[in-house]
Length: 438
Ligand SMILES: [Zn+2]
Image (cartoon, rainbow, N blue to C red; front, top):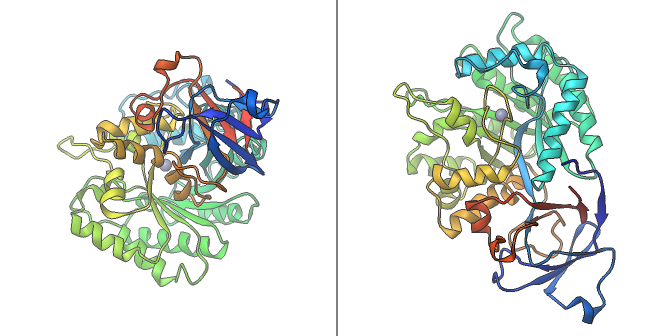
């Protein structure tokens, strides 16, 4: 499964494209890691285009590559790695997940961080991922260990996957034995490091509302000062009686004049509380956000496993609906692999899109295409990367996934709907025009 060799392609011949008739075949030429041209497929015997730098796609479907808009690199595979085999799930709730992860973090060392993180990226690339926002925790327990490993992996994989690093305060910035001072100092050290793209925090772990306010104010000011993108785990509960915190965040962004001061992309993760929003509240939210570069990222596998009301109802933000009904920028993501926050699932973002068909009751052709975009082009935009699209325009990044190899032609997926309904295993990943072998 390791992706260690690559071939730089000048042309990909004989593909089906998501925005064209499934019965038509196309050739793409690539230059400087971008799409140079698209033409109806020409017989290689007649146009002399055979060569070591021509990839014959054998009539398979080519689509924009996949993207993890939100994935925790440092706490992946804790349930599988023998080093942490004593830390298994007994209660299956949020409190236990925090406790198990805290115990595991006390044992984190470079060798297991690199081993687990490398495996996550390798498996993701094999599924067609060429970009990800990787969260690494920074605090008094782990110091800079998770960040150091994340930055090393970012460098190690730079020819195969764009790894964005989010230095992340999972622990409070203003509560606890030293009122969060150690975590804040660690976050400031992280913000100074080359290669850190994003700063993130979790206001809901603070002791009370005033400390949540301070958390937001501090992380916003720090992201502005260090010119980083901002990513918040926000409104992660299903208690309708608790006012949504998102309003306070928007006021604080405006108070600090985010746009005028050169603020970058902002992303809000989870936001399960917003499932109670009425259409009017969504409209009000849209209006309040109009001048701010904000995207939402829904994390349905974690939400459904972890979040429930006292009556045992589940809830996760209906991402396809807020995109299609209200025009928000949004994506969906895997979040966790193999830990107590989300024990189920794998490194395939398409599995989340497929789950979304049932979870969001989103089964039309248009829904399936939006779900695909939510783990592909929309996921990239949510984390501030250059756009790709299902229409594969000239000049877009030559980052693709080809579905699928090793199946009879009649069974091969020919449209995005088929890929979302039933994600196929056999994929070829192409990053900046390089064909990554598996
Ligand atoms: Zn997360």
